[in-house]
Structure formats: structure tokens, C-alpha cells
Length: 160
Length: 256
Image: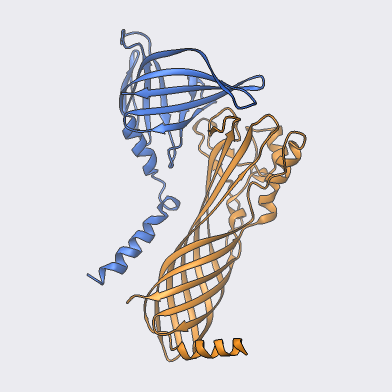
């Protein structure tokens, strides 16, 4: 038993920094597994003034958001290949057969952001959200933009 | 006089360094290519001098950080060899602040895996020798925009935001001096310098599927501002910027 202690220690040391050796992004794969399924998405917008005050803008919008490896996107079925990316589809829950907005989403090792690859059909631009909350039943993603001196924050809150 | 007394006590407590497996805890002073890394902060601070609260050095050129590992030491007749493996992690966290309440926050970390061969000779409690190793250093630099309400974004509203990574692999060579205390404790001091076989520089880059992987961490911010999307290697922070000498003081405790 005593002889196993050093071996266990060496193994733990080797694993301690495996993100420098191993590029498989286990954090990214775990996030994607948490995201799999159908969510209720609520989209809200906030205005951040230079003095730090935050005020809501407009009214919240709610729809359905499905994330998975194989999802129907309008007339075709999309399939992803990797563990760290998924197909994401937004649709009207009262009319699932209506037109759907489809994205490929991915993240990186620390799973602190979500990347919408080739967002809005443009292969020249990714759109990136910061992950504010990350649990199996609630996700909050923040997108930032600008309006003069103010910053505009759009929050996607996914619950189920 | 007190120093002589202390040295005498240490010498009495010391004995030949026995063979065995040692656990290591250490403190490292790691130096990077400070001049190259400093350019980001200098050019950024110059570019935003009118709006910036104070100049900022986003990528410090030196870090003091802990390391841990294990060493197998074999010896006899005053000569010894040691095979060591260590993991070390250094971090920095620097932020700028503009007059409009926004800013940038740059968190950098290096994660070292070092395999080392020590060849030593021992005179009483004093151990002297050479230290030769292979270093695998992972580099991760996270650039966020900060907002007046305290929130932070890694998002795409600025190209500068991102999670940039690289890795540098190189050999190290240097000297080791240490003190054997009793039959279980060894206090080594290592000074090693990099021995680079490859001079090519690879940029520290962010994941960017749509841009073909050419989203680099800027080193020269003026060139970056002139052409954020197409910054070339010469204007980017590179893996070799994170190569430099290392001074380490450790304590090894024999467990087997």
C-alpha cells in the first residue's frame, strides 16, 4: 500500500497540468453535454451607462432553443462531428414546424465563452458570448454591443 | 560568529544524501522575454494615453511561482544522479481602466511540465552538480473587456477579446547546488537557462474557426489597431516570448 502512494502522487502530478499536453478540451465537452436538450430561452436587453448604472431595455422575448448533435434545421438535418461542438436551433415552441434559426456552437477548454461559428450565415465572422451562469438547469449567456457611450448587453437565459 | 555557529549546526545535521524517492516543493523565479512582452503594454498605453487612467503592463516579464514534483535520487561514493519531474504554474492579472468606465483585463498563466536530470557530487552536506532538462510550457492569455457595472466580456464586440494559447518546448541546462540535511531532507537551488534548438516563432493565437486560425494576440498594438484582422506573426506575441532562465529554491523530502 505504501508503495502505491508515490505512484498515485506521480500520476496526479502528471494529470495536474494535462491541459498543456492534452488538447481534447474536457471542460468543453462537459459543457456541451450539459447543454444537450431543449430549453426555454428568454432574451433580455440592458443598457450600461458610463456611470455604471444598468437599466432594462424593451421587453423580454421567449422562445424554444434546442441543442444537440443531430437536429433538423428546416429542410435538412444537421449533424456535428466533435465532442466540443453542437448544433443549436431556435424556434417557436407553439409552431415547431415554422422556420428555424440554426447555428453551430462550440467553446474552448475552460468553457467560459460560447462561440457561434460563422454566425448569421457569414463564414467570415464568429459571434462570441460570455457564459455568466452554467448549470444543468440554467444557462446565462451575455452578448455586448454599443450605442454611443453606452454598452448594450443582451442576455440569453436558458432554463428547463 | 552566529553565522559560523549556524553553519556548524547545519554541517552536524547533514549527512550523505541517500538514494530514494523524494517529494519536492519549490519556489521558482521564471524570466520570460520581458522586452518583447512589454511591448504590448507600452504600445497599448501610448495608443490610449489620452483616455487611459494609468499605463499598464499586461504581460509581466518575470513571475515568482510555486512548483511541485517528485525526484528519484540514486547515489554512492559521493556521486549521484536524480531524475525529477515537476509541475509549475505562474499567473498574472493586469487591468486597464478608461475614463468612460471601460477597460481591458488580461489574465496570463503558464503551466510548466519539467523533466530534469541532475548529475551531482557531494562534499559533506554540500551537493554540487549540473541540471539538464526538458521543458514543456503551456501558455494561456485571456483578454476581456470590462464594463462600468463591473461585468467582463470575452465576447466578439472587440477583436482583442479572446482566449489565446500556445506552447513552447525547449531544453534547459544549468547548475545545481544543495544541502543534504539528515537522511530525509535535501534543499536544492537550481539555476537553469534555456537551450533552444529551434528559433522559429509561433504566434499565441485564439480559436477562430472562421478566420482560419489567424487571430493572434497582438504584441505591437499600433499595428494591431491598423489591421486587427490580418495582424502578422511579427506583430504577435509568440511562444518563444515565454522562454527564459529559471531560478528555483526547493525542499525535497524522501518518502521511500
